[in-house]
Amino acid sequence: MPTAADIAPRFDTQADAIHWLRDRRISEVECLIPDMNGIMRGKIVPREDFIRVLDAGIRLPEFIFFQAVTGDSAEDSKIVNPLDRDVMCVPDITTLRLVPWYDEPTAQVICDCYFADGRLVDFAPRSVLRRILGLYAEKGLKPVVAPEVEFYLTGKNDDPDLPLEVPIGLSGRKESGRQAYGIEHANDYDHVVNLMYDYCEASRIEIATMAHEAGPAQLEMNFRHGDPIELADQTFLFKRTARLAARKYGMVATFMAMPHQEMPGSATHIHQSIVRTSDKANIFANADGTDAAALMHYIAGLQHYVPKAMSLFCPNVNSYRRIRLESDAPINVHWGRDNRTCGLRVPDSGPESRRVENRVIGADSNPYVAMATTLACGLIGLEEQRMPAPVVEVDAKTLGVELPEHLSDALYELGECEPLARVLGPRFVEAYIDVKKLELRLYNRVISSWEREYLLLNV
Image 1 (cartoon, rainbow, N blue to C red):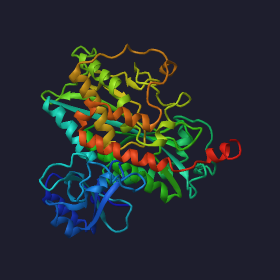
Image 2 (cartoon, rainbow, N blue to C red; image 1 turned 30 degrees about the vertical axis):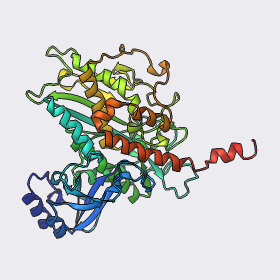
Image 3 (tube, rainbow, N blue to C red; image 1 turned 60 degrees about the horizontal axis):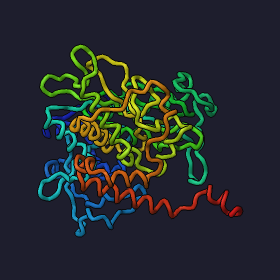
Image 4 (cartoon, rainbow, N blue to C red; image 1 turned 180 degrees about the vertical axis):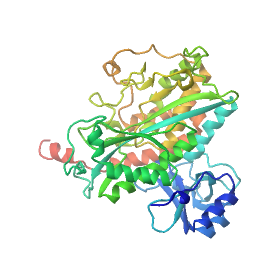
């Protein structure tokens, strides 16, 4: 493992970054760009070549943002440049970090993408999050977020037609049953989790706590609260970090929303609050600790727009297997005080940390898109000064399903929502829908094992 001296601090100047790269004898730099699905695209650049392009950036074709999760491209999108031009991917040196699992010293950096005329690529997910934060800044406000990411460890699986298996832990056995918050059950995967922590520390990913979730070998990592861009970057990097740590021990770390048929799904819960930039005060609470009107408007924005934004929070066909009555996931956007059955939860907290938790989001979401969208829903609520439905003090799952149950329905809702398109950017929304419609067409070509089992001889 790298030593403490190898870990890159947060660089504020190019000179400091260049000094660190040369002093630590970094051989290559992975220049990373999150695509529509949050998949890492980019180039691997030798150190000195990287230093030469720090200002200009590296060139990548625009179509990387139109690639489906399968790798196919939505070439018929009206947003795609017909000349297949390059965009310039400029390293954000504040994100420069070590890649801790290579023997050869290697760094990684996340890039912002620009058109030739210097404009940010408006349909790039990181640009969309920057856009939303800019809209808050215009109002003298700054969002603060804290994501919680759930995932499963599974055994290796080489045949996609076969169900995933629970991995063998340190006990020599496969875990069974529902052991939420079980300490000894979490301990069974200490070797994998400890390696994740080592990798995270070496690459400046700040994990606060870890817990065992309800599914077998299902874990949750909680991130420290902070700036949305920084936390989206950390979540983006963490997914690969977890996968690489699991692979070292012959396991798979998966962020699929519903990897097991009869087990709980995996979510990304995002806690969010808004502070004034002038005095750092949380606008969700009054001075006496009571809820401010801004909290109600924000919740109302989430209630109204989250169902219309579901395809951005739950982006895959598998995502909607999690949104069901028998699941632990929320099925509506009722809100409650410390009520985990609600899609929107206001945890018990003091005025400084008054916040809303969006529990609808899937673990398979793109962290940049999910954070941008949940903040956008709240922002529109603040602008429209909506008021929420009454607080729910019962099991919200008894109140019925109010969210789209299929990706096709969710994409239709997004396409019809002008306020979301206005705030997120109409070209981004159109490009996103084009990519997801391509994935739906590809998915619909596949004949499933359920169809072969029940239709082959019965119809």
